[in-house]
Image (cartoon, rainbow, N blue to C red):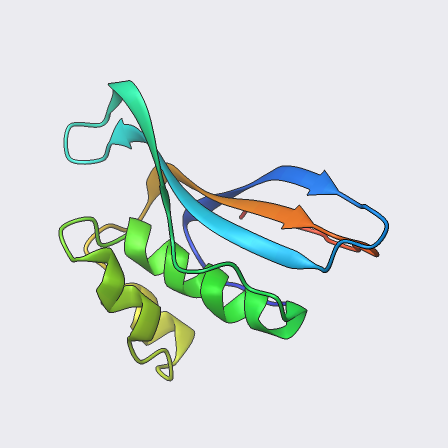
Length: 120
């Protein structure tokens, strides 16, 4: 998985469990007001789309979630279906923000799980 982004990623939960099908939930956690560059009084967390049950779809959903955080004035639903076929550098240039301190949170359930996340 190769991602070019300036949105942070947090691995919140990894729970291997016998008999439970693999799934990955995505949440957007807002801890900072990027416009004012200050911490929010209350942290909010919102689901980003339905859980993914196919590991091959994680990279695309993660890119979409990062793009949603970097464009906070646009509706979240837009990023679940927007075109991601641009060159990564062009895509990054189209974002409203160049960096955010807010997080994409992944909740991974099921076994076996082999997950590596790198915060760039």
